[in-house]
Image (tube, rainbow, N blue to C red; front, side):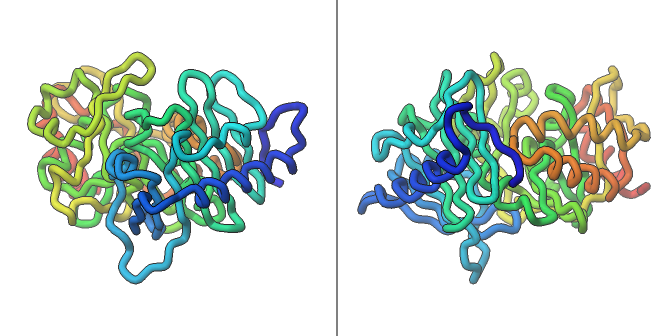
Amino acid sequence: MLTTSVGPTVPMATASRRFSAAVARAFESLDDGAIERPARSGPLALRLHFASSELADAFNVFLPPLPGSSPVLEICFTTSRYVNLSDAVPQRIAGHAALANDDVYALWQFDSQHLLHIVDFASRRAVVWLGDDFAPAWLCSRPILAPIHAVLLRTPWVPLHGGAVSLNGRTLLLAGIGRAGKTTAALACALAGWDYAGDDFVLVNSQTALVEPLFTSARLRNDLSSVFPGILDARAEISHEDGEVRHELRMEHVLQPDQLTGGKAAALLLPRRRGAERPEFEPARPIDAFNALLTMTVTLTPGWPDLVSKKLMSVIGLAPIFFIDTGATPNAIPDAFAEFLHRL
């Protein structure tokens, strides 16, 4: 057994059976109007099932399929219009709750929004269920973070809260608190021709240092829209999360297909703002990187925190660590990052 969080009056085995049954019901509810697509996220080949064409369009933030690969996971996207899965939830609390064991992984939220993610490990099937019959804009930019987190648990790969850009296969990982400059740096480099793996969550192999994109999305704060005015053509939605307005972008609309890729981590950069005019680098410690990575990664991918923490520690040991003040001139970031890579 790994870790659990269920209601005090519901036995864990009962909760697990309910969630497994809910996955089966969701797939059984798919009808002739459902849309099916192959896709991939990082190293995983997926098969996606959408209950409607509207859902398929809303969640169109995945990479192309892996050629000739059988799906590791099938995922059903559905809503309360097609199937009611609310009875599978054993406990309704403010915020989110999770159940994680060897049989199922479930993550649910039943306060301001009704959301349910389930992975049934035996059948290799998962469900993303929207109880309110619409997809929150922020979810459309990281729609299968929870299932990917669960499926990759017993592998070296870990979803990491951060961004990543690459030049000639050498990747700079960007990790830190909000408003520190991750998105500014990632988008500035991507628009200058660098490869782009993400600005919110990326996948990192904790043994080989390989970095892969999870999705083809970006999340641009409204106050940065004037810095990258042309990129707003890639906007799919506007989200309102924690009192902050963000433009939810589909980067495949502004980048070349071969730019949506990763590479091998050459350094881990911890953005922080110290008033520099142009980008400035300063050596940092492993504990600085761990603090920058841990809280948001574990919060947004609940379940198995000890295993996730161990993977994060391994990632931190793979490459040198630096603080980076990205400066007041975003256009200067790509050249500064290229010079930094050259000096490593």
